[in-house]
Image (cartoon, rainbow, N blue to C red):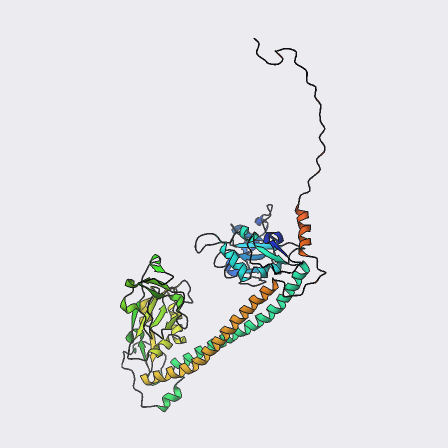
Length: 493
């Protein structure tokens, strides 16, 4: 059996196999979908992550249902394929317009056994990290298409308290998680507000509003930049005096990423191998974790990342990741992958100013504009090189950087605090679950019927009654004695 359970459980609890307290819902043999005009269907994208109840489904004409998994209202719908299972996709749908529903083939529908198990108790047990880790290790299939089989789930051990205690545990969990969810919701709202604050400050910086008073105090002292100016385009937004529109390629060099095959890389450092940054290392800053390593000879000298270089995700399976950019604030003894591009800013401008531009709404709006007529999952070199950037005089660039660093440090501090609080909330959630399934969340009641008694009753009901066999009467038969050699079938001399 699969187990992550310690022996330190209350006396009236029982450790059992998952299949002893649940059933996996199956379609009745005599059911015909054609008896219904429309049937509720639940695709994988409508199964939420770790959400107790859901009302999401779509109605499909019954004659279009060629495959799917049958389930009934109240079943736990557990995603069984990677990465949906590891992400915790599971929910319960109770209200359906028909007596059943059809889900994606990549779910396992689970139902409690009446009088033995509480389905919400089962639901939360399947979210315990140790339980998920055990089941993940038993998934089978090819990389990227691993699936959890019902036999592995059936073999999972679960600590089973008396049914009345299960109900008390569920009630306590709902109270605690309601409070915790409200706190998490407030933290996430605060994160949104901090993000808006950051974007508002950046927008004001690159529209000239952030330094308006400073600029007025230095009127006549600022010299425009001596770089190529874009003036032939119509409908360009008006800029403050002394500012100009220029193209990214006129103030920087674009460098392509390192091209390598999967079998030429490693997840761990090796002699003569160097680390490579990829698209998933880019957020508002660069993350030097989860790197791959490739042979040094494959990385050209100009492909090594230097301080103030800007790395851009040029291609990704996620449209939200494409176009994300981050500036390196240190030299990096490595390169960057083929799905990224690098902008190396010239000495004519303030490099930090350009890096901050790639975090601004002005830049993100331009990326959004590029999605019209092209595949947003792939940016081209010319998309970046021909992008317009508002460029103030060098002294104002430096002032903008100074003010942005001051304002954004406040946002950074607030975001770090909120991230820490969200992580603490998640640790608290896991601690609550651990207490729930070890018998420490609610007090035991000696009047509760022990789980072992309930299970014994169920086992007795399941055992087929063997009918008593009637005694067989012995029938005596008379055997005639042979009287001749012929009757004995013996050869005659």
